Length: 99
Image (tube, rainbow, N blue to C red; front, side, top):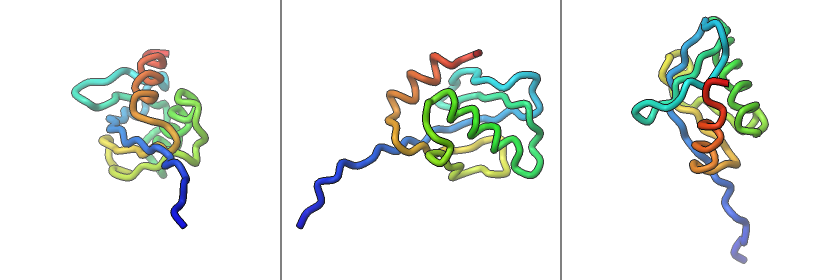
């Protein structure tokens, strides 16, 4: 029997993470890469945790839907988000810019 399940969308976004910032916020998109500032230092995964927390809050998705698939120890990252399509991500990221 064929399964009639609808595929859950997954979206990959590229991020330039700027740790140790005065305020955690989404700065906008430049050249296909989202610039995001976080307060936490890039030590013991703290900046990554804060990034996932910020994205979860701004995109209205549970933290478990986010995975850093490239760049866990780099400022340039690719994050996979389950359960949301690219158009929705782009819209929510734009609305969250500089907040």
